[in-house]
Figure 1 (cartoon, rainbow, N blue to C red):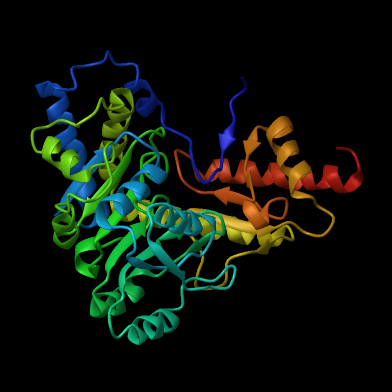
Figure 2: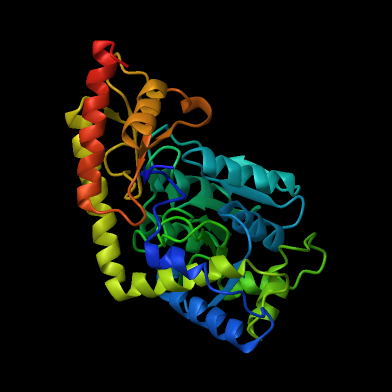
Length: 367
């Protein structure tokens, strides 16, 4: 298959040394070599989460990490406040509902981030503290929206609800200070800003969240975080882990820290700014509102006369450039351009040359 350039919300382009790591012979996942690798991975993840607390490694997608947080921290009947800004925020709420939680939604206009004032008003009105948990999305790939997690933190701390954060596509690309801001449980995954293959979810827990794991009435087995942490303390996972993916993640994290977290933040922000500017130059309309732009995914409506489906197909088949379309109510309406992974500024330039050429083809009736 000809080489493609992936500008997706994930999975992303993976550097050759990271891919080669998966060629290593498998090792004993109950042995000392695996234990040393697991300790390295967890140590490397702590500054990315911004925590000194416990981190569990799961063999799953990011959705598995989100489910693990709900399953381990809440019982049926508890009231959770969901703050979605797109499809994955709604997925988080759906997971909670499937576990029997009562889920209330704080509505946010399409393309906007959660309004701190609206969240504060709802939490202030909850004087009897019926809301025991809040579901948040750090970065929403379906809409290209990012929440200001630092701005939302004070009112959440004042209320006292357990806070769950989907940072699957945010962590590693932009600053997150879990301990300082006071978030309780955060999930991320290997195939986004950390630029490893998919297959590993990682969740970090505060002391408050850790204490909730002791509720033995909770329905859980594979995603039992209490058991995952117990095994982590002896350098293992409770179930057979995706060893080859962990080899790759180990190398990806080493490369990430060698380049520096701040450099990663600046690279993603710079790439996203360039993508927004170029899309607008070509007549696209951004979905995300000013002040709510994601650094990892840009979502935009094509200019009049350009259908997203044929555009995406032309880019993939003729130019080897792979972008994403919309999801749910946005299906067939937008394109999404990801900035994560092993891509350079020159790759972005190549992509936009292809987009411009594809637009000409489509508007001239050639394609």
